[in-house]
Amino acid sequence: MRDLASVALAAEQVGAAERCLELTVAHAREWVQFGRPIGSFQAVKHRLADAYVQVEAARSIALGAAYAAAEGAADLPRFAAAAKSACSEAFSAVAGEMIQLHGGTGITWEHDAHRYFKRAHGSAQLLGAPAEHRRRLATELSLTIRQIT
Image (tube, rainbow, N blue to C red):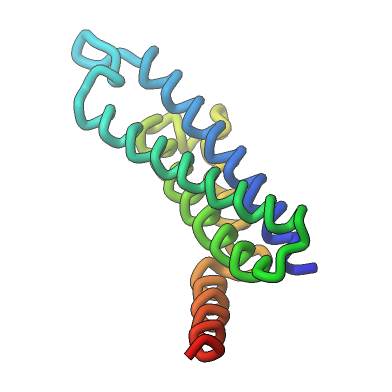
């Protein structure tokens, strides 16, 4: 049951991380600093590109875990552990970038950024922290290797 819940939570985290990225890209297009939108600055573009890569990588692993869950695959524990760990870390990272790129607005009650940030860090601990899931994954893989050799 924990594996199925982890897969579902990973999917939620991917969706929330994607929404954080959407809001941040929209803000970067609109907010003007030094006479031009902040999204036109190379440093901001790189941060947004990195966040995009994190979201897409998390989406891939979440979809793989969802497929394993739907198929009732025997290696679901591995997929669930990998998805929960990767998606938790991606959501936390993208929510952190959202706070940073929104500047002072991101930490006020007038903007939703702080809610995403809190949800990211809370959901990362739900059903086990990312490090715990990586340990689970390492244990599963070492057992598999022992069986093969």
